[in-house]
Image 1 (tube, rainbow, N blue to C red):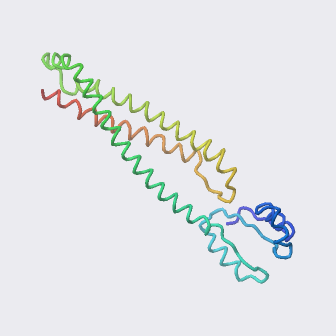
Image 2: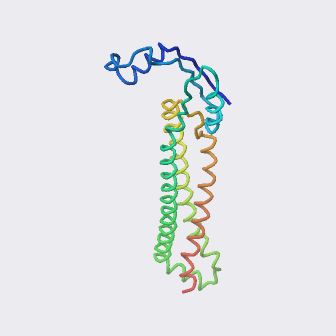
Image 3: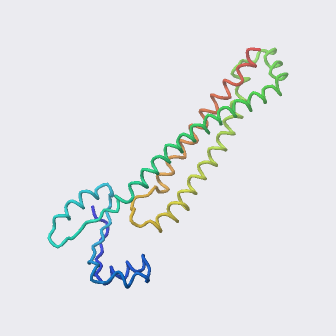
Amino acid sequence: MISKSSFQTADQAYQETLKLVGKDYAGVLTADQVNAVFKVNLKDQTQSAVIAEAFSGVKGVDEVKDQLEYLDPLFNALTVATYIAVGIAVLMLIAAVLLIGTTIRLSAYARRREIGIMRLVGASNRFIQTPFVLEGVFAAVIGSVLASVAVLLGVHFGVQEYLTKRVSFITTWVGLNEAMLVVPVLIGIGVILAALSAGFAIRRWLRA
């Protein structure tokens, strides 16, 4: 449950406090006003309330501070930001589907004569649809791969190289292994939506 713990004497805690608030407060804050401190890092931050309750009744413990209480507003803001990001992602997904459909329609319009000739010689609808569907799928694969690379780079540099080194009290972060799980999902959704969008977009010219 506990990943790391450390002890600070009253003098060490006093010096650290001065570093945080500045030397100007040295005349106001004295060493005898600061207590010795035990710092505990948990493997699972959700268990912080259990640890705080367990140590609160221990003799010699003046106060137990749970930093998660200070972070709750931040986590709530991140939750709201997550919902907003999901909403934006859905809108972008819809926009991508419409864009693919429009692109395929324009491509079909530019090749309407070839489509007409293929229909006259007895080509099946599936045979005519296939090149357009493959065109949409190819574009979707490229877009999905680029998006996957962006996700992996964001996790590597933004999370592992930046946040983990600056926010030490949070021990659980999204890693590359978790990010890799998103890659096939992105590619799969992109390919399926592109194929469906292209298939529906070309149907008008097959009925003409």
